[in-house]
Image (cartoon, rainbow, N blue to C red):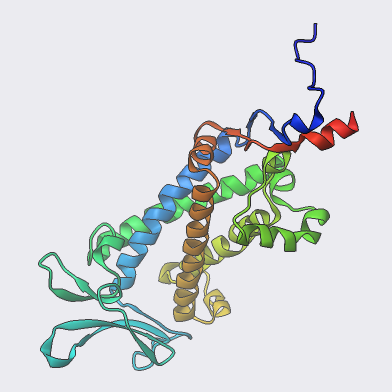
Length: 298
């Protein structure tokens, strides 16, 4: 028996829009969720321990050898005018920028400025603990590599790659509209929210098959042991110093991706997004339907 109330005689009194019930669906499978959180742990520790290592010599070069007199990028401390202590200076391609308190020179535990590439709050396990920083970095780097290989294998053999990550032709043709929606902070709802949008797809593909392999290979290139076992291959990256620069730039790209990713999670519903990556279940955002158009079709 139909329990719906009859439509009002006065059509103008009917609401112009009605909301559909929000629906839940299983968005992220267990292997994806597990490997995602392993990546979160690894990337966090790799970034912060990498900055500890970088602080031992906060400069980047291009080529096989270090040209200490002419670095491409350097973070240094200089004496401030009038004996006001140290100031941080970041030099990029010969141009100096005052970055006091953040890069080059930051406050120590006693409140005085100390010469340090990155501040202590951005580094682990200690501000200047190079040896332990290297141990942490290498351990989590190998965990990260194993987890990455496992993810790519799962994505290929489970169909996750073709089903969820590869954009189709229609999506690629509509990339302009997707860019506009992102700039206006508009997010898909209803059935469209069940699939990654084209910009998400492209970003994930660049990270998985571009930045991540580059950061790993460039990291290997800085190991004298691997260079001794397989001589000559480091020159393909321009030399060890070039590899160090590529490693840093790729890591910076990963950090930029993470920051944009976190921003999108926050503005698109942080609890819904976080819950889906913990439990797998995602609630589709409530959509509105033009009731007058629906009535016209009936």
